[in-house]
Image (cartoon, rainbow, N blue to C red; front, side, top):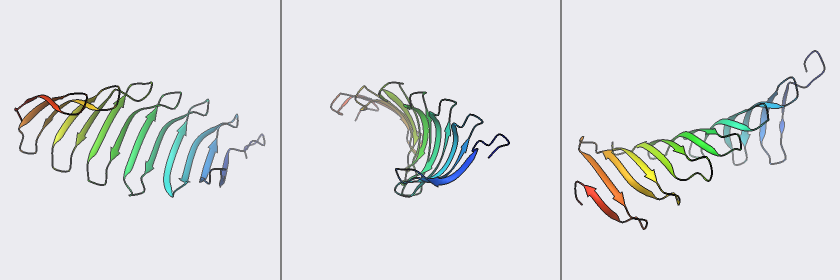
Amino acid sequence: MDKDGNTRAKLGQTADETTGFFIYDKNGKSRVELSLFAGGIPGVVLYDKDEKPRAQMTLSREGEPDLVFNAKDGDPLAGLRLTPDAEAHFYLRHHKGGNPHLDLLVAEDGMTRLDFTDQEGKPRVRFGLKADGSPGLVLQTKDGKIGWSIPEK
């Protein structure tokens, strides 16, 4: 408690079985949460002055890190994610609905690629470099087939 008798920090468990350490501002609003979420997923959440989650860092069940930045309404707009296959993904999303989005990734096989997805989240344009340094550009149809590519496939 602070000098005015306001709770500024609490250790506890929420209704959804999240166990954590919660920090509040002088107005009693949640601002920081260090928690073990349902399913055993550890994470840190930063809230804005309206108690909306704006940034969060978690570890997946496989132990891979995930960093997400949210719009004021909670939609994820940007993030950095590592996969169990040792791929690194940096993504940007449209504010409403998450699609279309842009995904920059470094794959396990050493390929570096930039993917543009359509409204349904399907990759439509892929531009990248293979591990040997050779470039490629692929335009895909709505059903995922290659419509055009360099080099030709």
